[in-house]
Length: 174
Image 1 (spheres, rainbow, N blue to C red):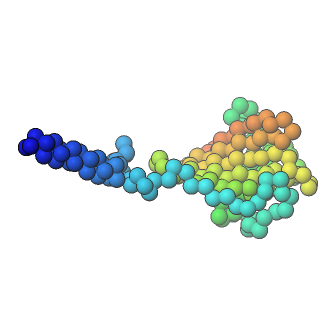
Image 2: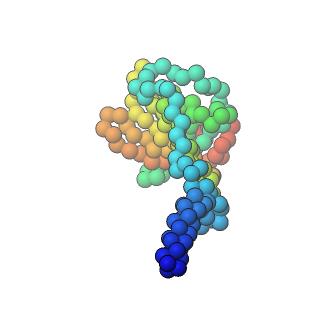
């Protein structure tokens, strides 16, 4: 009889401890305590604007600064993007091009974690009244990246911030 009672106590203890372990906070490699139930991997905020919409959204278009980028494969290919004080992209211009191209906001993603959160914003390229391609702007810490997907053939072009050409400057780099 003592063995049965002892066995039941041990089994009960194991199951009650197991529940406590599953609900306890976890510790990651950076020694930060994170609650299992409160840990979203990705928070995405999507604005109700369709990517094929030609209507310009109601975001501010007052330019605060510019970021210059170099193509990852062709160093002579450069772009600048103008931004508002809220970090919304307004226009893009390629080196050698006469006029900048308007950008239309599609959506934004915010990814927590790491040393810095990663913010990804998507924009459509509007030439005249047509959407011509899509830009994916990624910002994390000091680094800014642009991935352009050309609409007619889905070819991708990648650009990285050019730290040598006055990044975050009040004037465009070319």
